[in-house]
Length: 228
Ligand code: TZP
Ligand code: MG
Image 1 (cartoon, helix red, strand yellow):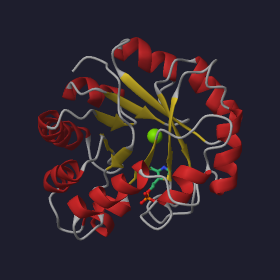
Image 2 (tube, protein in one colour; image 1 turned 90 degrees about the vertical axis):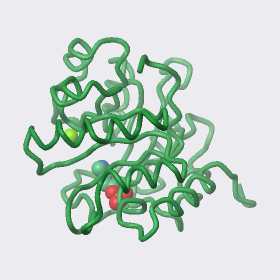
Image 3 (cartoon, protein in one colour; image 1 turned 180 degrees about the vertical axis):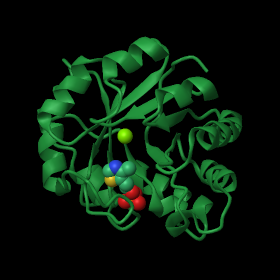
């Protein structure tokens, strides 16, 4: 799939741990989420060995392609290459952005995690396609987060992103669910860069009905509440 305009509105990040996925099948959960309207998928598996990552990544890519939605791989540029998917998401401690870009090429979608202005600036200047800003709220899904920035921190960062100098997309992550997504999405839109979407793990992956959960989240992301 060549690089094209990506819709980041509702960005699903997977989790394969029993605490989140239970005994469900990851491919079925991802497909249900796609039916519910998820617009971008990241395969994130912190415990799988390389063979598992490549095999599951290929399986998920077969599903996401049917829905014409990009699949990115968390952390692992080598796995993204092996899967032949649309890109990667890298954190501050992963392979650096220039090297990832050199390996994957201009057509790849590369996202970078950022939680402060210096990281935002480096990723934007380095040619990342989007920023994953967070952690917004403390979350059991990722306990060892360096920084919880809160809605205020998110707002502050977005205000500092000069949309003209840095034409970069933004999603936020960390503890986002149906009860806070409107607040995050709409109250963080100040004079600076608005969010392009939200990234969620448990609100979809651990939902009893991932399709319905995705549909509800997408609707909330897209519709400004009365107070906005
Ligand atoms: N990065 C920052 S928080 C997080 C990641 C991968 C996990 C978010 O999970 P959830 O369940 O949506 O809070
Ligand atoms: Mg990482």
